[in-house]
Length: 90
Image (cartoon, rainbow, N blue to C red; front, side, top):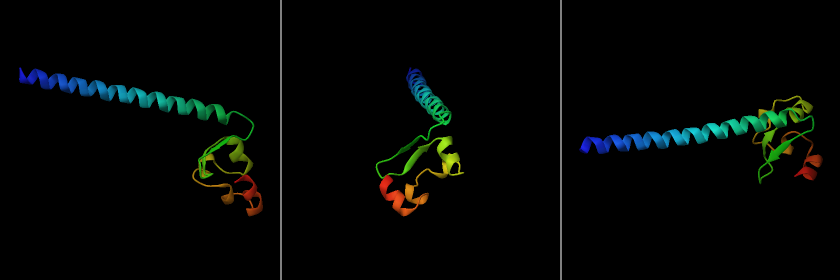
């Protein structure tokens, strides 16, 4: 009898892990879809955090500065533009 309870607990844990995995897979799919969408927009698209650091940059924006989108992550306008211009964007 004790062994059956332990098996139920394991099944329950596996079910929870499966649900969490499904959620993570859906979120990864949504992120991939979003990134694909913004990379196919010809306009410059970027998202910054509250400290004005880039967290998402599309391909058009990166191509403009001849960089890869990942080169922007965690950086601010001050890393790419003259100080005078950056102050206006900040």
